Length: 206
Image 1: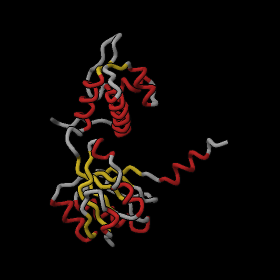
Image 2: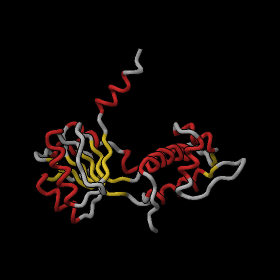
Image 3: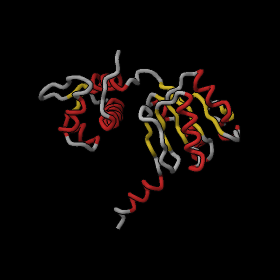
């Protein structure tokens, strides 16, 4: 099925809705109103209904949305009906912690390999993820048709590694390196700067 063209910000919100629906399923909830789902996702109900318009017409007046049906529709629209292979680059303290996070597969993503310029096997022990030298990264990505990568290398090396990822065929990067990456227009980057997140939170501390 051809993937629906959805604005990037709406894609992010759809992912949030999907997480909320998953929690509802786990709690045995079968239907949810647009108001309740919007509140759980932290958006206005008008915004939610607009976003859901990208994946189809759902909901019954007075009854709300079927949690199962809506979740399946969002999954299909986002193209996450099967495990999406991901590689992780940079197995330092943060990279190692990310590899030990069990939530990726639950959410539809599988880290199939990790790479580091100085691979230390102890950092991936117990994860089941194979660790390779960074020199093997490009050939591995190309041969396994990997389109997504997690970047957790020092800022001084981030752009160089990002260039290698893009050249190998990666189209989306989750960037934990504290630097802004320059990539082609057809490559998408989501930045996760933990220091900035903490700084923004500190504003609300009184």
